[in-house]
Image (cartoon, rainbow, N blue to C red; front, side, top):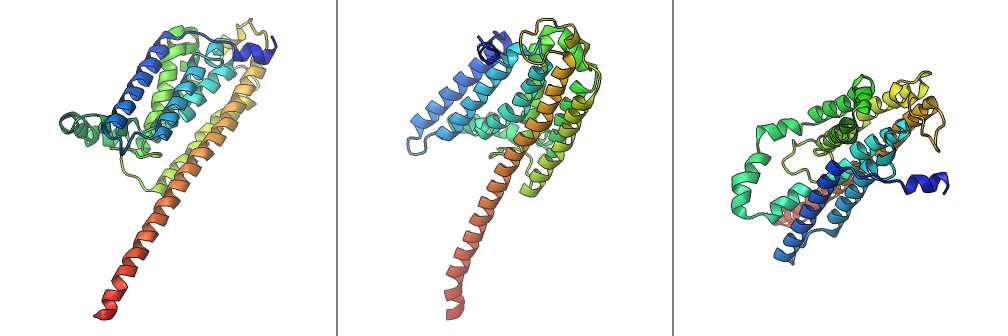
Amino acid sequence: MGSAGAFLSSFTVNVPWLVVVFAATLGYLYLARRVSRQNPQRPWSGRSTALFLGAIATIIVATMGPVGSMTDRFFWADMTQHILLMMLAAPLIVLSDPVLLVLRATSRQTRARWLVPVLRSQFLRVVTHPIVGWCLFTAALLGTHVTTLFEFSLEHAALRTFVVPMIYFSAGLIYYYPLIGRSVGAYPIPSHYKIVSMFTMMIPEALVGFAIYTTSSVLYPYYERVTDRPWGPSTPLLDQRVGGSIMWGAGMVLDTIWISIVVAEWWRREEQRSRRLDERDAHSTPRQVSE
C-alpha cells in the first residue's frame, strides 16, 4: 500500500469524540424527523441536514479518521485537525441551524419556559458578541501555538485528543454563530461588520502560519522524538513547515468561502429590500395622483 493508501486507511477510535458525534447525530436526525412529521407543509430543510452531516463527517476525519489518527506523529496533521474543527466543522454546524431546529421541535410551553429566556439572556448576548467571539477565536489560535500549552498537550494524550480539539471547535462555534446563518438569539450585527470581522481574522491566522513556516528551528520538541515516520515529511522541521503552510493557505481559502457566503446573503437581503420598496412605491403612487 502506498503513502496515500496508508493515510486514507488510517483510523483510530477516539471514545470521547465518538460519544459526542453519535449523540449529536442521533439528536439532530430525531428532531429533524419530528419537525417534518409535525409540519408536513414545512418539513425540516434537507439542505440543513446535509450541512450538519457534512460537519459530522469533518469532525470524524479530524478526530478519528486519517487526520486524527496521525496527530501523534505529524505536526501537519495536528494543524489540519485544528483548521478542520475551527474553520470548517464549526461554521457548517452553525449553517445547519441546530438552535432553530430545537425551537421548532419543542412545544410552545417548553420554548416559553426554557429556550426563549436563554436566547434572550444577557449572557448569550455577551458570548455571541462579535468582539468576544473574535477574541476567543484568536486566543485559541495563538494561545495554543505560540505558548507552551501546545507542547504540554502533546505530552498528555487526553489533552491532545479531546480537550484541545474541543477548545478549537468551541471557539469556532462561538465566533461564527453571529456571523453566518440565521443566528437565532445572537448579538445583532450588520453584514458589513461581519465581513470586517472575517477579514481581520485573516491577520492572526496568516501571522501564525507564516511564523511557523519560516522558523528555522523545531518549535515543538515532542515531534523531534517521533521515530515512526513511514511516509510524509521526513524531518520534524519539514513537517513543521508543511503545517505552517497549511495554516497559512487553507485558512485563507476557508475564510474567503465564508466571506463570500456573508456577501451573498447581504446582497440577497438588499435585493429583497429594494423589491419591497419598489412594490410600496408602486402601490402608493396611484393614491397620491388621485389626491
